[in-house]
Amino acid sequence: MTQDDVRSDPQAEHALLAVCMESKTARAKARKAVIGSDFDSLVNERIWDAMGALDRADKDVDFVSVAAMFPAGTPEHATVLTFVGAASIPDHVETYAAIVRSWAIRRNVNRTAREALQASMSETENPALLAGKYAAKFTAIRDSGQTEDDFTAVTLAELLAEKDDEPDWLIPGLLERRDRLLLTGEEGLGKSHLLRQFAVHASAGAHPFDSMVRFKPIRAAIIDCENTKGQVRRKLRGTTDWVQRYVGDPTQNLMVDNLPRIDITRDRDLAKIHHLLDTWAPDLVVIGPLYRLYPKALQTDDDAAPVLAAIDSIRDRGIALLIEAHAGHSAGKEGKRDLRPRGSSALMGWPEFGFGLRSVAAGYADFVQWRGPREERAWPQRIRKADGSRWLPHGDANDYAAGIAS
Image 1 (cartoon, rainbow, N blue to C red):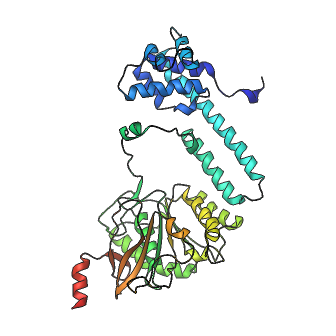
Image 2 (image 1 turned 90 degrees about the horizontal axis):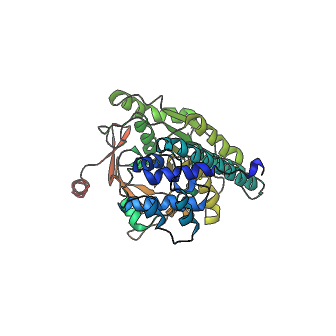
Image 3 (image 1 turned 45 degrees about the vertical axis):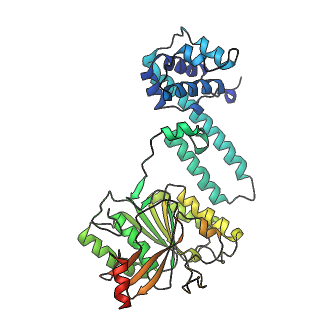
């Protein structure tokens, strides 16, 4: 047997299962370190899962009850019986679990490296996208000992019995990690300014629409592909001055980069963006506008697919994305301009949130949904410009509308 043939430590797997059958405390400790797919042996994985099923059903877990989960004569039934009288020590459960997990990590690294090697030889793969994809996979292995492919399926009953995960909020009630917001609107209305407001406020730990809502400041990045550095400086100064005066200092938590028109599907341009992300590690990124990320119009789904895949390589880092796009010029049923993004219909289904700004009066705009949100969030329906540097929710849209009509 060569070193390459060694995939696990069978003795550690058996010792871990044996002590877990003897002690509920041991099982609780083990579950903090391993999951079923960490076992190299499918038989051992099934035995582990059987103990979990018994615990979830609030039934006794021991050699007899676990063996009874499998028909006599099966490898699982026979293996459980070998654990009776085993010399495993319950106090060593964390050691056994660490050994099992370490081998699982090695196998994951080996498998992912082989996948990366094979994919790297394909001329149809975008090398920069490929590097980002496998960097994310190796990071997942490093941080958790597992990749997304390792999660096991559960029954609906087991799924509903679990507690709901709390959203990983970046801006409480509004944006969580990996959310994508695509903002369209009428030209010159302030789309870019609104997205910059998100970044500046969040970098100081304040809600962009309610500065009284505070949270731990996050790291943000603005990647402006349209304006010069001087233009961005002037556009950011008013918002930043207000936030510094009334909220806190965002300047050390916000990185700004100016890139001329780029092709985000091109290796060199995408690598430049990922280099910034590697260096700064932002939680939220404002990038765009969309039409400046690719030199051609995104008229078809085939046009849009590589662009959206490149942008998603940013999101795959656990980053929330805010992007400006142009609305189409056609009118809707009520004669108002359709605020859906111009071009491929793929842009409609891609983001978690799609909104457009429609002017209703000087300094006021409706915040219009052009796609149904995937989750309910506290988005305003109408916003107004305040003190020349901020967009704020307008309190009562009905009263305001009545005032206009009069």
